[in-house]
Image 1 (cartoon, helix red, strand yellow):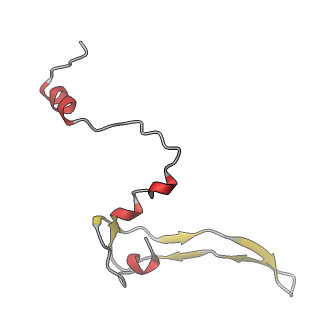
Image 2 (cartoon, rainbow, N blue to C red):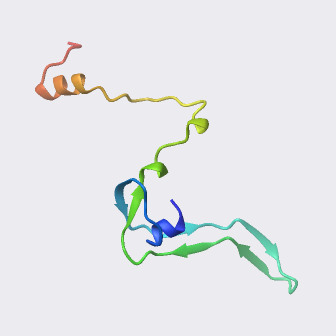
Length: 91
């Protein structure tokens, strides 16, 4: 997600939900000004005026970022349907 998408300036390609959280970024670094004061750099907080769309691409990792991933849960509809009906194949 980009600032422009959250502020509604750019359309979201594949919306999967809505959000209304404020954008925030914490301090990137601190430095001493020529006057001797400590200055924080990179700290922002912007509250959007209205809810915004959340893009599918913001929750799905890129393939190159998943070289060492372990999936703990696999969605398997038949087992879920059997469990929903009260029948347990493991008993």
